[in-house]
Amino acid sequence: MDVRIVRANIEHLKDIALIEELSFPIPWSIDSIKNEFEANTRAVYLAAVTEHGKAVGYAGMWDIVGEGHITNIAVHPDCRNKGIASKLLDEMIACAKKRNIKSLTLEVRKSNIAAISLYKKFGFVEYGIRKGYYEDNGEDAIIMWKYL
Image (cartoon, rainbow, N blue to C red; front, side, top):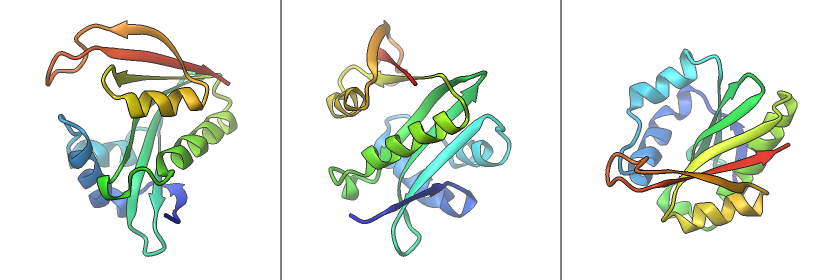
């Protein structure tokens, strides 16, 4: 699928909220996402956009004193397995480097083998476990890091 990666903005809000709802057991609310775009000065959000301007994937990161915390990467279920998450992550890493971020971290569900494989492909390494991290089912999160 041909997409371009752009800085996410309010025009992408409804698409991203839908992707969030379809992708996560406890999705962020549309107001939370809007707040990330409008008020969180540490937030960087990217959108994978089709030629018609529809966001079919997105990625978010918080820039916290030289460290990037990846908050979410998600792709609409109809558009998965087409390389979109890889494009988003590749561009997020490039964005982090431009911002002089020295390392990236994230948490991922222990059962999310596809995401773990993606992160490992990009050089993320498992550094620990957050026991019972996910509220919906008490699943552990794997903490992953990448040094830039």
